[in-house]
Every structure is written in structure tokens, then in C-alpha cells.
Image (cartoon, rainbow, N blue to C red; front, side):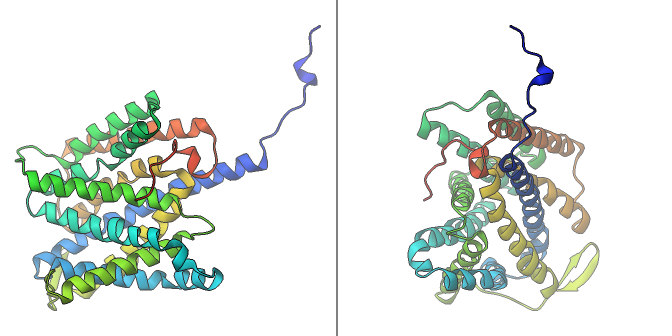
Length: 336
């Protein structure tokens, strides 16, 4: 007996499916906005360091101010949850020491021993490191889309950062790899955020933890602290030191971490890490606008390949149709 398809009921998408789709879309938007915010930090901090500011002073102000701006979210979480700090102190300390403090210290230390482009390339191996870590842990090979997306994105990254003529430095390479591990920790720990650990509270507590540790390093003389009142040139205009520093601390860092930790639970650590590669593209744009560093044509080609790689990885994540972080990852690596 044949059954007419016209007589079959039409099954509308469930409300949960639509909610999950909206969550993933909002997560992608937040992830891109976070990368945009982070990317403006380098072009604004670089003139300060060249004008006499020490790295310790710049990072201390950056983390401290951003942590204070987000601190109301932390106080609210402590007020609502009895024993909040006791329950989550491991993730908070891990977030403050690795994604916040460690990533910046390792990267800038590597940058002093090797070209910036090479340090960037190694640091942004983090998405591939996450894919490999999940592969080793679960013993399940990633899909063809993820493998092709990873390869295309990495080729694009090589073209964007332009490592031609770079020399090898073992210590610098190890420092840059340590920065990449810290970037992985950023995405893995952020994925643990949720109702019990609000993302903004995680960002605020991590930033304040990083600022406290950096303050101790500066007070003991381990990290130099110089903060002269100088003028810097941005987009051909001389501005006082506090203007770029205010932007980096109160806007770029605050929005970067706030939007980033809210995005990762929505789209998962794997997709979020590939979306984070757009930070390299936005950094080129800011350097072009404010530092007159014009990108080469090959860098535009690399940017297109990075975007293509992100699309391939995201297409694989979309095919699963799972909510929250499960849409983007297989089981994630345990948070450090």
C-alpha cells in the first residue's frame, strides 16, 4: 500500500533546535567580536613599549583595569553562590596563570628572541593542537572537513604572518609553544563556564589573579616596571600615553575576554579556536590604519584561506546539531 506524502504531518523544527541555532549564531558573533577587540591591543601597546614603557607595567595596567571593569560580575557570583571561590578556585587560578598571564609573558618573551611573525605562527597553532589533543584522547580521528579546514587555515596563517628569511631559535620556539598551550587552556577552561561558573565572573577573577601575580613580579623586581609619561604616535597623530593604554585596558582587553568566555560555551572550544584566528586578520587591519604598516597582497590571500578553513571546521560542527559546546567538539581535553 502506498501512502501519499501529502497526508503526512509536517514536523516543524523544535523550539530547542531553534534556540540552539540562535545560541551558536550568537556565539560566532561574540567570537569574532572578541578577536576584533584583542587584535587592537598590539598596535596600541607597541608604541608604548617603544616609547619606554616596560612590558610588566603595560600588562599590569591592562589586566588590572580590565579585571576591575568586570569585577561586578564576580561580586554578584560570590553573592549568589555560597562558597563560589572555594568551589572554583582551581579554574580561576588556572585561567589567571595560563590564558591571562602566561600567554602574554611567553609570547612577548618569545618575540624578543625571534621574529614576531614566527612567534605568532607558533602561538596560533593552538587550534590544531586542540584537534590533535582530542584525537589522541578519544582515539577517534577528526572528520575530513576538520582536517581539511585545519590544513587550509594553517596555510593561510603562514601566508599572513610572512615568515620568509626567519632564523630558528630553540628557546624562542619553546616559549612560543608554551604560549600556544596557554591559548589552548583559554578555550578549554572557557568551555567549562556556565550557570555554575558565570563566564564574566571567570574572566574577572582570572584577570584580577593575573594582575596580582604581575604586581608581585614587579614589586620584587623580577619584572621591570617603567611607566614614563610619554606621547606616542597613532595614525600620524601624537597622543598622550593614557589614551592607547585606556583603550587596551578598559575596552580591548575587557571586551576581548568578556565576549570570548561567553562565546566558547556556545560554539565549543574547537570552533572558537579557529574563529580566534581572525584576530590575525584584524591585527593587520589595525596596524595598517594606525601604524601605516601596509599588508602585502599575499597576506590578503592568506586571510581568505584562514576564513575558508574556519568555514570548513564550522560546517563540520553544524552537521552535528548538538547544543552548546557539544556542537563544536568531540569530548574536550580536561582543563589544566
